[in-house]
Length: 316
Image (cartoon, rainbow, N blue to C red):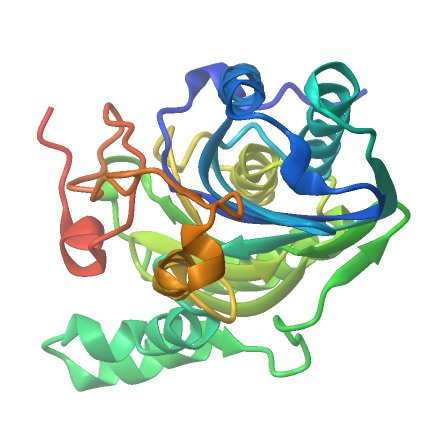
């Protein structure tokens, strides 16, 4: 008999910054044949799926779409809805038929690159500037950088190729501090057991007295919400101390390049003669909302301001 979960999706008030690109290819036909009205309809339909279209770059034989998503959306779900709704739009609204290739690619992007996220997690203890250097030295053993996990490599599945990198942060309830070696060790080692059980690979981890950082190459069938709940529940059960985590989390996507690279590429493309001739480029303005704070009663979408985020106390 399974124990009842301490944490459920309806109890959570997460902060998140989730961005994905979807790439699809045509085996027949011209992908530029879809009229603008159909794209307007697609935006509304994808919105109901938890996908918000931010940008698109459409070539005759390929399409690159950038979405922001809610934590309930997995990369596999995103790939299915992006392609499925696009195929239907071409069947019902395009001037000529288009056949899509079976291959698709979904890639995580964010305001931060893999390099910066790993460096940030690696420097957690040093950045805290603890008064007692002996305690800082003691804490270093609970930060792990796993060089065997290559976040630049995709996870191939039957439905496509996925670059699915997540930065997850859990905060202890009431910011209570954990300083004993046994508990810190259990959280560190237990995190790796949770990841292995769920098909994730941890690239970096830092257990701090009142919060936990995990950067992982996640299973593309699992949504960010499912990833967070798995860590919350399994680690709480391992510790046997009840609901030790705040009923919320931060989760963000990151990759080998950030959103600025996509925006820069689109600006260059739209400024080219071909782009000015109308090659299907579109940009959504003001799609990044800064993450101002994170408390158990706050849910915002945007890019984190790391320093204030992790020192923020619950003020509600």
